[in-house]
Length: 143
Image (cartoon, rainbow, N blue to C red; front, side, top):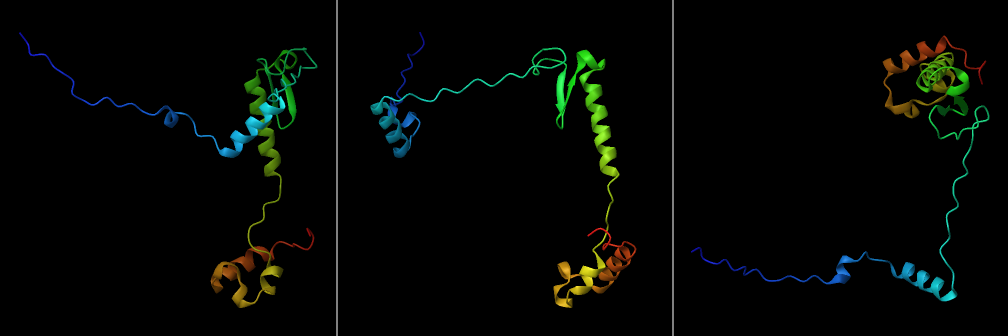
């Protein structure tokens, strides 16, 4: 016959107030005041559901998307949503690459600074590189 095992661990009873979420006194007071006035909590309005002008389906359904404000409906376009998004991303990259890219620090701004004000503590050779790279660009035409 096996000996009987007796659990001698003390019984731990937690106070239920510790388990409840702490509410600040201000929040608790505001809730109580609302109840006393007979007010109820504000009911959230349901979101307005937009529908597609082309197929009259909700814009949240499959085959509908938008990219930077341009809407897409796969039922009328004849291509998949993924293909259209890929095309739009390519168009965006091409339009961004057409913008002028400026490298260097404008020389007329750089020369107006005293030696103690040169940006980021540049040394002379770095400053000369900036002068050379910015001298080819005419910044007065832009500004």
